[in-house]
Image (cartoon, rainbow, N blue to C red; front, side):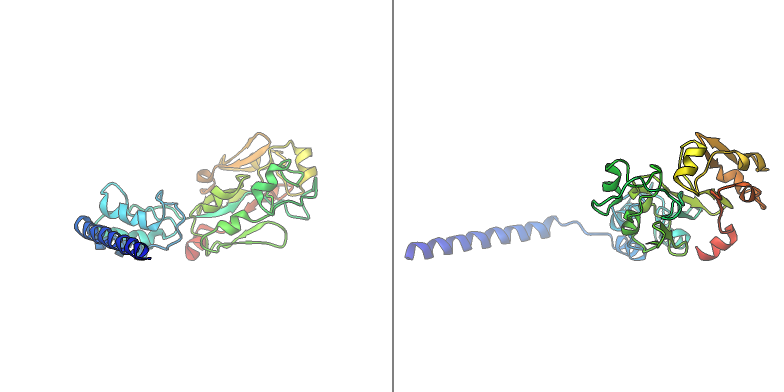
Length: 276
């Protein structure tokens, strides 16, 4: 009994000794944190989206304060307002950046898109894609299980009743988290300037594409031939919009020419600036 008590006392003593040594070492070698880092972090939106290229807001705050090469405008969700505050605190100059928002290049709704199979697996887009490319006939289309919705750190996406994600442009910050999450590569970051965009990603030939989805681009080229700014090309049976050239167009004629309405009008740049 006495031996057991002796062992316990020795272990407690040894533990207390090493605990004291570690505490003293921590105090001696601790590096003082720059209080400016905390100030910068406080004004960041805390989405932890990684759009800045750093592993979270705290790491970006540390980098932008301590590294003169890191610009103050890398916080995409914070937009110009946060960039200006970070620039003021760090004494740097914030270059102007164009605001962006997420855009889904698919209109393969439950009623428009043909189904090839009935999927009963895990309700996850990446998992469904592994099973024959997903249940839809069009293997380019949205799988509709909402991985992007769950990943959005700002609550800017919901899953609509038609089976497609809905993007709230007023809440979307353009962080790009949903872009990285979509296994189909259907979400892009859209700038404010272009008045139209293609809402399809299918590279199937016209008849096949139309058979699989009523809203598909059939690559007919009517939009390209009607465009007065040479902003649309047909690439592998799919219309592609050059957004820089398209931004110069005030009255897009392609909208009326598209037989499947695969080209959709966007909010005007002025309207988008009001909601940004």
